[in-house]
Length: 374
Picture 1 (cartoon, rainbow, N blue to C red):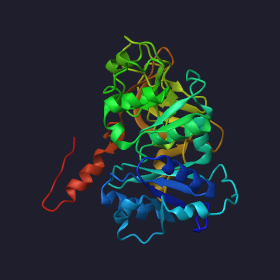
Picture 2: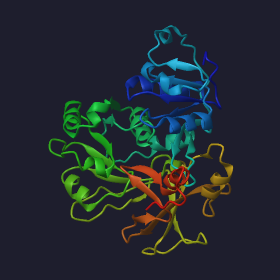
Picture 3: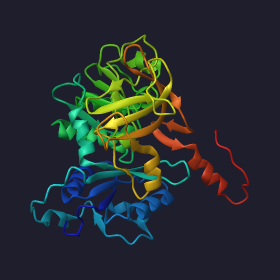
Picture 4: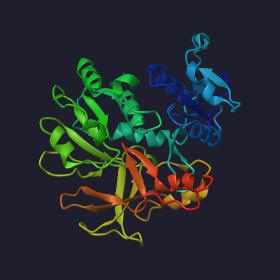
């Protein structure tokens, strides 16, 4: 706050995964500002776009990454600056529920990434919808990129729920063997993973670990590999709905690909036709999400926000629902089955990629007259 950071602003955070980074997020939130996580592995052009688009008031950064900010005149706060310890511990005014807590950028169909704004009220839905099947004394890992909202789930579910958070170094996350050893050593009992990542991990020795999957379709093979003898839940939700909106019942082996479940206590979901009318069970429609987790929209993109965050005809006046673009149907057991997309978005290891963004980049190259991306 001594740097003038206050409510209504945002602070970029570009660091490797560490406990200090989590402390920095808490510090930003205590000023009333939002944090903008930037993955250092992203290309300079993408980082530059986010800094220009979000216009942060400052950047908290690891010393070795400062050259990545060349050309951006922004106040820089070194996360390891010893002067931080000399700052006063004056209490700050708590942020309001509708203040923005964080921004996360996702791929855009037109080639322009879009910043999703999530408020403190939205974020609290994570603490209020923790699955009852999880252990009472929870130990979570923090093993995902801060630019991927799985990290938000890991950090805030653990801290708001009074659990312990084990921050996993980059070199460990890239080695299934080392990661497995850390899970055993730290007695981790809640693990969030994408199905493609957990498939590379051995379930042996992890019998007491509850596994929360999400980010992409979950195959029957992953269910059969992990469901025997432990709680495995498949969660679903876009970044715009604050990490997840639905969760499956605990999965059982031999039942095929995992459903994406039923709405959590803080969300409502609707399967609608093109006229926004609910479709019967077994009929395919597009999934819309309402409830506490639905975010504010896209930063500086009022037109785009209006097409995706629309008035909900099923709730109280003023209720908003998010059009996900996901195609689903209700199963007889009251859970949703995911079928695919209504557009050309794909998932790669849980990350959203809009083929339109790749198309726009290819078409802009000198010498390219036409491009197609499939």
